[in-house]
Amino acid sequence: MGRHRIAVAAGLLPLILVLAACSGAATSAPATQAASQAAPPSTAASTAPSTTTSEAPSAATTGATVEAKTVGALGTKLVAGSNGMTVYTFTKDVKDSGKSNCNGDCAVTWPPLAAPASGTPTAGAGVTGKLGTITRDDGSVQVTYNGLPLYFFKNDHAPGDANGVYANWEAVAP
Image (tube, rainbow, N blue to C red; front, side, top):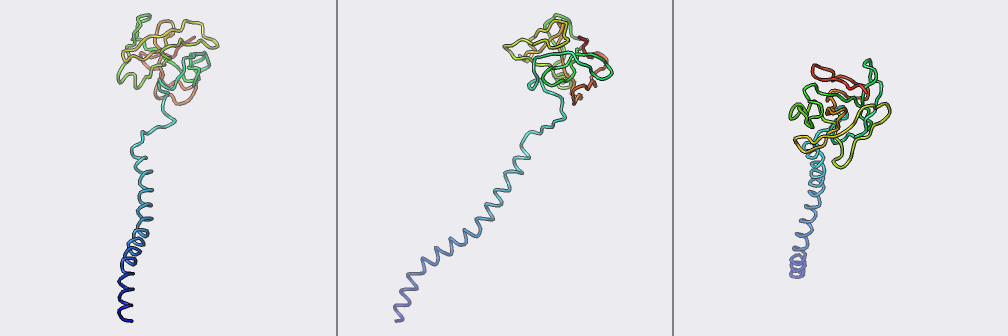
């Protein structure tokens, strides 16, 4: 009987080792899975670009419809129809030159009102002047009004804001 017990124990030893290994892996797997499941959200959060809803509209998110609306104490001014944000002209731009003089850092503060490359801007209610487009130095297409490029101001956060009236910058009358 002694030999029989040794043979059974010897035969069970590999099975015991396999079960021990599996149970050890099973025990550590949930901790590993939990750690790996927790890692992606923090990694994703740290590598994802930050966006806020209080940023000024970018050229990519705007439409090419322009309309006249009341803008605070300024009275009736032009706004982008897609978002209602006030648009401005830069006094250093030259009428009908087909060129914007606001590029680089200037265009970060004063994002251009973009138009689709294949489309033309649409005049909404109250717009009496001529809408057109120019091609900017970076190849994008910008809406013009009476031959002057139109811009947003990065510190306007809601329709009706007119924080961009500065020296060389004017809200546009229809």
